[in-house]
Length: 637
Image 1 (tube, helix red, strand yellow):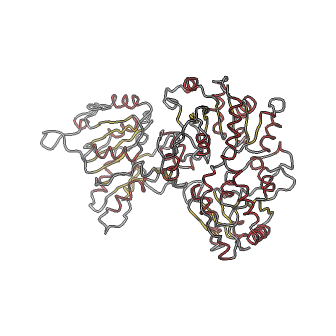
Image 2 (cartoon, rainbow, N blue to C red):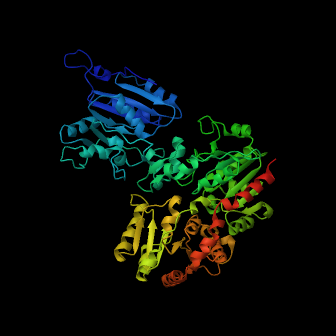
Image 3 (cartoon, one colour):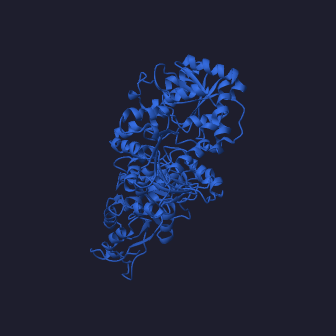
């Protein structure tokens, strides 16, 4: 794709002339215009470039795998100008590789950035060049009318001197944090005694950073319902990611899933063809328990997932995406009919409901298993209860997370659902493989104090509660909490209050992945589940999601041999409380004093830890895979 020459407007529109009139003057500024699926914004951006008071620039539009490259080319065809070029490629390579291509394609001594969805004021380049006239300034930055809410400058704000530095590319890291990707390198190169000098501000607003749902940063940040799998889905990333978010945890899928990617899973002659539809939530590699048994897996994924709702292309491999289903004109219905799977296994949480319903309606002749976990209440809020009810009542078999969730659906759909078609299997159990780590000594054996861990969102554990525990000698260890703008900021303030009031008793740790659950979490005496008060009074029709749920962190704790701290709810029906009492893996409390008492008893006798180790195998997906395959075979035609 290329474009050049001639928007109306005189010599400067064709790149200007040198002082002797002997040809175009060398460009002072190289303008990099990255675009992915933003062709509708592109005319506005390029119009603002062409209207700059500084005219001696060169620009390259960098189309990083837009689904409709013809739309990008059409914009350039309508704005011909000798200073404007374009290049593009079919598959998305990521922001770093795209901008490095732009750096390699240009030569001007100053580099500026104009993302396709942003806009410059006419004097934007002039203001930035004025700041860069100072030899001590390596990077200049415009102001924004409305602050971006990030700790780093946005592309549209910045111009800098050309250096040998390059942007970090996808194989090393993807992040919304442009400091980590590039800006820090420029600041380190500042003449000011090698210090990490800040960008020099112009003191003026000369650009607009456009906020909209399609922004790359929003695909990464959990504050905007983004995250690892939203990013993967939007940009169709086919390799494992190393991804960092300014309001989430760093994840290294390359290291985590190497063991699975390099492991052979050979199809069995009598293996089933299973079409996995929807999303795989927190423990996606569980599906490899079926591949290990010789079954062939193909994936059709929701495009409306959350950051922790795992979708394909799957980073651990061995599950082929349905051919062509993700193309702009892809017809997944035809692809499903061509595949003719033995069974459709649709799952798992509320974001998968619309796609699962569409597949069921489009292919009513295919055996269909609806495997649902979370949460019917959320589907009601979203207006998707009719779809969910159709799935539960129309599937050949329906699997739900707990006995209580099964009974809730039976009560909600009397006369519509056959109880014999409702089964129970938590669809987000981890693989047994993650239990193979080596336990470490208990912290309490060294200091005599109980230590409890929060492996995830600290639901119900506010500053007052943490301080009350500390006053009773209980240490709380929180994993994966971040300091960031947006929703995370409120919890960060709670942590600050708790740590100030109880120094030495509230501990923060980086997130821990499944490959280190046993090694890291086994040091503690117990783990926290969600702290909540049930209000159902023994009537499931009044149950909320906490009443029906078996939390994803429960098998994490059991893997490390930890009993679970669970608030007692006498007189209520609470699924996880029933499970814990049946297994002997719960430490129940109603007050901070009772927490201290049950933890002291656990430290003294380790009865909960012994129970956790005894039952943890049952809380793996492997333990139930054969039963699931039997169900599939009973339905296959």
